[in-house]
Image (cartoon, rainbow, N blue to C red; front, side):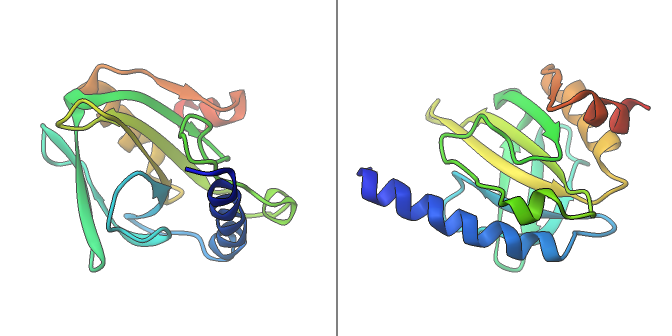
Length: 156
């Protein structure tokens, strides 16, 4: 990817995040904020399903994906989009000072071809604790927290 293409993607993400900060996901919904999933548009709202003991599933009318728990290499939770993805996600100053808290879960994983991938999901307010507990138990990977405040939100 050229420097110009990288800057173009970065600018596009900067325009996307303010739109995301206007509406939070609710209930059992989740939002695919971005990542390496091909064919699924950024900012796609859908359902995150943890019922299957082998794979984490995301589904929406716009598309779906599955992440095998045994392929997960990293899990990070916080109020900022994860820092581990190769694709940068910019949060503008306006979004940082927004009063609504966003709950971001970044998952790094390897696909069937052993290539590294990642997704950033926005979770609804009441769901991070159960989702993180399930992912940790099924993948064997411990979640890292962006801050002590994020850890307290999940573990009390």
